[in-house]
Length: 505
Image (cartoon, rainbow, N blue to C red):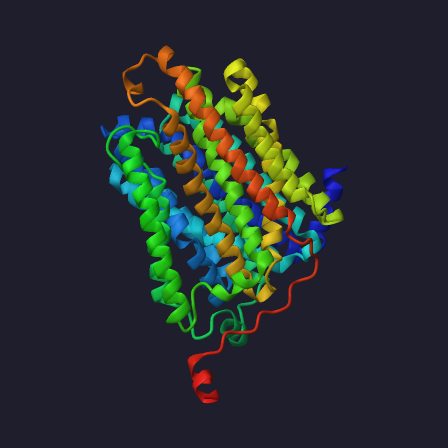
């Protein structure tokens, strides 16, 4: 298959070219400013004489703002125009990055990092909605693959470029690097905004009758914030999911999240005139099923990012610098496989593609669990190939599936829930997999030597991998019963307002 032949239909009009370039550039900006930044934490701790618990807030506050505001950003897009809120996110990311680069205090960096997280939420909450409005259902597999390819490339670039900056130059260059990428994204967004039309009053009222539910938005932000914090190491002791301090923090935080989630659902269902989340959409079973699949998929992604470093550092007794090289194939596969998966999805719409990809991920974790302790370290990336390939297949086509599961006028809800369930999967994947590993470790493992502790970590790793296998098989079963569909679903009837209900009475 020719890559150019797969991409060419995506560029057949000026509007499509503008949207694809703008969204891909913004995805690269978001990805460049997320995972690779973690490389700078040790340098910043030394620079400002701070502990890792303080510098970790640079990552935590970014994830907190991204996870908390992404659905609200999507609903703001419904009301004010997705392209405009998307552009607001690029501007916020640019301003935040510039202010970080000139900061002279660690807590200034943390504050401005929160601004870049807010910008990323505005971008990610609206990018999927813009793509869904631009491309018909039969082209969305490839359309959603392109930004993912750009994001994976940005991760690879950031991992190596930032490492060189930190080794030979200054940490400020890490954040200065966001500026040219942000300017490119902003320049690409300008033509897209000019060719778009703001939503009409009728469209605004259809998407969010009576305006945005700000009370529900506040509850939503609080619920999402607790979810993100539940996956962050804000507890005493080592930064670990497996320590006693970690368990006594993470598990109650997950419980607090569930309480807030229940309160949010009750308020939205019983009292909100125009809910920030229309719960009636979840009665559309294929929409709900695709979101469940999305959550389980991202559960496996954070399980990978949590378990593999533990395996490398504690099982094989290697330095942390080795971990990125073990995870490198996972990023490389996303550059090449995602577009091929999108092309197959668009052309043939095979029912078994999504469940097959999830079973492939499950098989990769099964291989890791069965063989990790009996092979050399260099074999681990090979054992992970099914995870890497399955992830690269599933991600773009499930995004397309979610965005095609509701009528186009509800694309803000679909886009926001797509990103929200992504963060839910991340939060639970890291905590649950590490908690399962901790259940197998002996109580006094901290007092053992590295050689004595290594077999116990391998045993815990096997148990955690089997748990992930179970979750992925369950997610694959949900994906299997999801009907393959091309046409947009019928419009959901608007929820009657209190005024109309009273008039009818």
